[in-house]
Length: 307
Image (cartoon, rainbow, N blue to C red; front, side, top):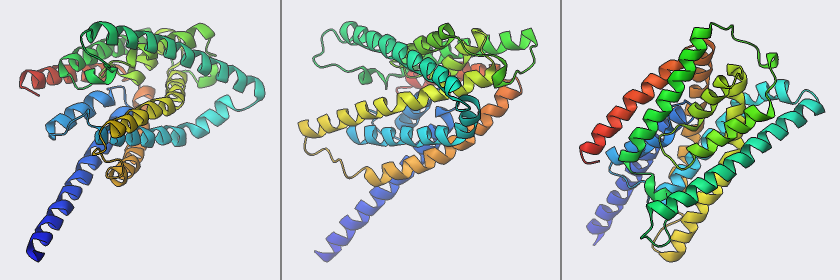
């Protein structure tokens, strides 16, 4: 009896260690990829499949929510001084910035919600209570989304290099309402599709619309801070519903690994942001597009291999 208890206890501890180990791996991937224009969702989904995890399980939903929370705080810490000196200098500048963020976010919500409803209606026509998240683990959909993001980033980067424009300071050009609205619309297109990098698409759109690279970067991540809380709330609500439908689904069992994952995602996110800024300032944005195209091919091969 005692021996059986020891064996079971060791098995549980081993499982917990493996779970935390997996969460740390996913947190590092999330932290690095979320804040680079290469789609963190695509990278995390592929990693989960390679690790034998189920991306759609309720406990993994909680983990991913906390990982996004960690990267959200990384964005706030990294950009705070830049936002404070750029957007919070006086009331008029802050008001303009707030209006632009609200406008872009509202347009994101409208475009994203309409697109979500259309997908759920036509892609899941024969499925009751279908949710857009059911598409997120399909590698055959992630691969073309990565390719599309890669083409957009590559086009924006090469266009910027061919113009040979000097890197202007953030104060050099003020964003217009049409520019912020366009960025918000593109962000809405990214929401339903894993692989279509939100940061890559929005920063590239800003660059193509004539927004200075530094301003496009900081504005894109400001939108991410606003967008993350409702996304977290949605995923948390889905987890609670899953628990209500099936009481065996544990809510507390994933709390510690999730919190640990958020810490690692926060640290990895800060490193990724520093790297991203360096690549933007050196005019190598187009290389992220090349990476996305290569990643698209790898994901497609994994799909063909049965993942």
